[in-house]
Length: 205
Image (tube, rainbow, N blue to C red; front, side):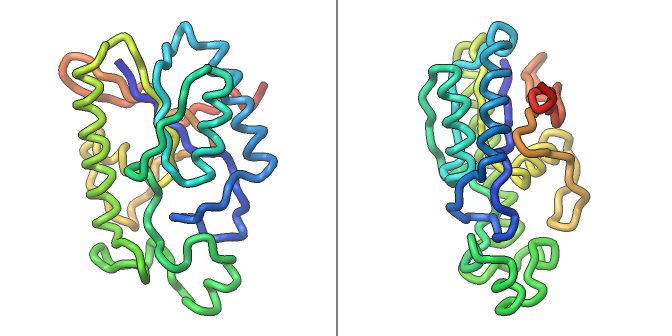
C-alpha cells in the first residue's frame, strides 16, 4: 500500500502563503492538468482510489484537476494545511514587510506563534499526528488501494522528517518539494518508507 503526497501547483508568490485562501495562477493550473493526465495514464501502476486534499484553495484547485482525470471525489481536510501564519495569510509581501519586518517562519522560536497563528512546534505536532493517523487508517483498509494527499511543501518536509527519523526544526534544511511534485510513501514489512522523492516527470511532457 502507498500514500502519494503531492504538493499543490504554483500560485502567486507575491503574497504570503500559509493559510492563505488564494488559488492557483494559470501556470499552476497547467502544472496540475499535466499531473492529472500523467496519473491517469499510469493509473494501472499507481492504483489511486482516494484523493484527500488540504482545504486551502491552492491545494483544492490542484486536487480538482487530478480528480477530473481520475474520476474520483476530493475529500477536503484542514489537517493537511500548511503552517497557520495567522494575520499575514494571503497578505502582499510588501505589506507584511512594512507591518511585520523580519517575520518569517525560520525566524520564529520553536514555541513562538505567528500573530494569530501557530508555532513551528504546533505545526509539526499537527502534521505528525495527521500522518500517523492516516498510516493507521490505510493499514486497516484494502492494501491494494492507494491514496493521494494534495498538500503543501512544509507539510511534505515534515512528513519526510517523521519517516526518516530526522529531528525537525523550522530552521532545518528542507527536503526538496517542487510544485506538483510526487512523493510516494509505501508500507512493507511493518514499516513505512519513501520510495519516490520529488518526482516531476509530468512537467517535461
